[in-house]
Each structure stands twice: as C-alpha cells, then as structure tokens.
View 1: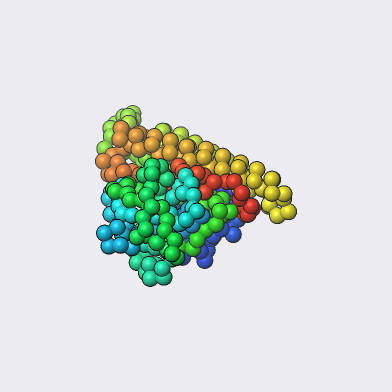
View 2 (view 1 turned 90 degrees about the horizontal axis):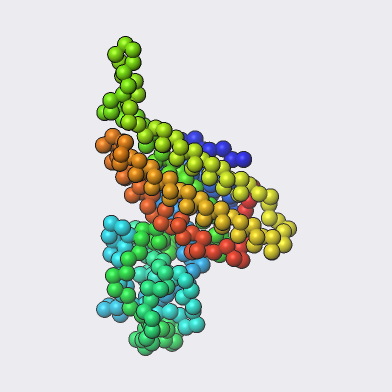
Length: 327
C-alpha cells in the first residue's frame, strides 16, 4: 500500500508531461499530485490545465467569427463570464457537457493567445437555448451549423482549460480522476495542518508552577480527527489503484474496474469536500486571525480543484475505459 507522501514538493511544475502522464501507473500519479496539491494547489491546478487539455474528449461548439458575435471570456473572482455566439458542427450532439472555445481551435493562429489565459470553457449543455436557431452567417466547410448565443454565462475556474495542452482521450479518464483527487487530498491535508497549529493568543490551563501550557481553545483535536478521516480515504483510494495490471483482461473486466474506480473517486470527492468545509468552519471558531487568513487563502486556492473534482466522473465518464494503468 502506498505511504502518505512527505511534506515536500517536486520541481517539475510547469513541465508535468516529462515527469508524469496518462501512461504513468496510478499509484505514482496519486503520490505525485498529492505533493503538488499540498505545496501549492493553485499553481498545481494551473500547471495541470496548461499541460493537458482534459476537455478534449467532450463535444465542442465552434465560436463565431463576426466581430459582433465573437465570444469573449471575462474574468471574475469566482471564474469567468462568457458571452457571444457559437454553433454546433452538423451532426454533433452536445451531450451533457459542452466545450465553449473563445477561439476556433481549427485555426492555427488561434492557439497563439491561449498560453496566458484559458481559452476552453466547459459548461452543462442545459445552459443552451431551448430552440437554437440556424444561423447561415456562421459556416464552416460550406455547412451551416445550429447557432446559439449566450449572455453572461458563469463558468467556475475549475471548468477552464487550454487548447495548447496535450489533448487527453476518453480512456485517459482514470489518470485525470487520480491526478485531481491527489491534488485535492494534498490541499485538504494542508488545511488540516494549518488548523492544527496552536493559537498563541488563547489562554491555556495553568500549571502548578503558574506557567501556561498549550492554548486552551484549540483546533488541534478536531484537526487531527479531520486528518484521520482524510488519511483513511486516501489509503482506500491508494489500495484501489494498486490493483493487478489490466493487460490481457477482457473488456468487461476492464469496464468493471473503471466503474469501481469511478465509485471510489466519487466517495473521495465527498470526503474531501466535507473535510475542507469542516476545517474552515472550525477555523472560524478556534484559529488565530493569522491562521484564519491562511485557511481562507487555501480554500480559495483549492477551489478550482474541488469544483472539478465534484464532477470529474461525469465530465469523463467511466464507460468504455480500456487503458487504466495500475501498479
């Protein structure tokens, strides 16, 4: 069984594909990204989405080129607000989740501006108008697609990625699930560590010689309990990804393993969200002002990871997975 990683980080951020990727055994993926999430969840998420276009397997709309209809993405504190016009390629089913590019990925010059800001945004297809109209002005290859316009649609930070990243495939889902869950475990572990720091401003019980021991109203006990819950769930996932290699297994067995891993990821997501919420709630009651600020920053920095993780299995569903690399 994989051990919990030490409180150190790698130096590979920004060059992830040379160190770890879809062909890496999942136990290594879990360890690697937990260290990254523990060290700096915000930087880890940015590097991950720069390195890999996790939205590649999803159906994508095509952005309009007309100046008055060209899509734009405006940054806001919680993510982005999208407005503009797109059309679906003929015969494309938007499915449950849809990619909304702000530039047309089929144009080579569109990729030049994607390095500094996300240019692919994923949203539930229910935001589309109920009856998209045909728009002859929006054409590609001589065929008019079904056009639709959106105004001020909000997209969380965790649902943005980059077309310049290496496109992932449907059967890379297990890599994405494990990487994001590892980052979430690391970020949550950092929260519990911060919560466990003693409050130097709180009065502690008096010893027989009149000195004070560790602060009285302390979050150390609850922090230890939350850390234990997190550790147990992390070890459960580590045991799952340490299964036997899949080479030579029948498709039905592979699919069953993917379904089992997806169920484990869903459970891990619920646990991490509960731990993060409980840690922050406890911090409001017990932590020193400085630590409350540190916890608030950590919650903000790990928000994109938690946003994505909550829907990871829906965004890249387990059906049809056939190349889950296990240890």
